[in-house]
Image 1 (spheres, rainbow, N blue to C red):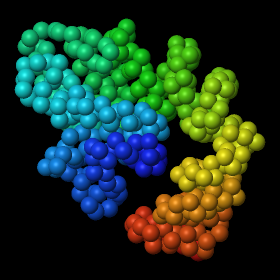
Image 2 (cartoon, rainbow, N blue to C red; image 1 turned 180 degrees about the vertical axis):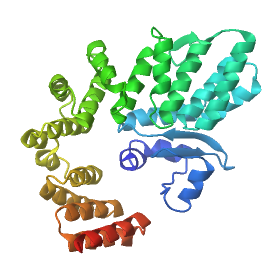
Image 3 (cartoon, rainbow, N blue to C red; image 1 turned 60 degrees about the horizontal axis):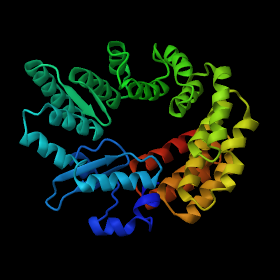
Length: 367
């Protein structure tokens, strides 16, 4: 997705060619795995910006499916002020500057360098203890230093496995913080992923009351309802509102489909991310593959999933799409076709996971 929408997009390639030598590397294979270890990459996709001498300039993690936003981020990094190398240099050039220490910790958190971030935050705490409280800037906010550190520790736990407890502690200690919305936004994502957490249900009850106009929060309310089957009646108006505002947004359509699947309403589920949606993406290989995999995982809508996987392969003959087609056939109990498709994946990319899948299909076939 990132490669298609950004790195090979003619709108951005002149800039990229002017500033970079661009390479795409599979981090599951050598030399990608070696690079991942060397630069501690744990988030996918990640864009490594490496200097000519091999030292790290920056890491941009993730992708929000908006190439314009991504391009703006890349340009910010290239300009210098937002890059790891510049932030790190400021920190070492002015070791007594608490703001620079915190900026480095925050950048390390963004890069998912969590051990390093924790050590840097401990140094910030020591400086605050020794010198007394001071204000710290975090993006557009300026808050007391210990408050900023508490928030950063919460983000550290969140980034280290979507653990919400650090942010819960922060919101309990600083309930009126200027950073409260950011904390609650991350908590919403954490609780949507850890829906069985003891505090999740009460949190989303509060979210529906406190942030009814915050679309990000409402989206996570839907995710929580889909994960748990709770508060479906209260959540349906949220689904309807999101669909009205974003009728073509794939993430919203998927969440609506997941919601109606949870309600066992298949006709409505298919209405949003079903065959009609598929008809409109027949020239988008990545979207077709994602659609096929979505339905294969759920053992539903398999005829449409088969059609989209085949079309995706016609557009872009990738191992992962053959793997998706294999999964579709497996769920259809067309075992030999599933094996044949997985073998095509192996021909293109001999991953152990693909070979293991063939073993599982054969074992299921012989039961």
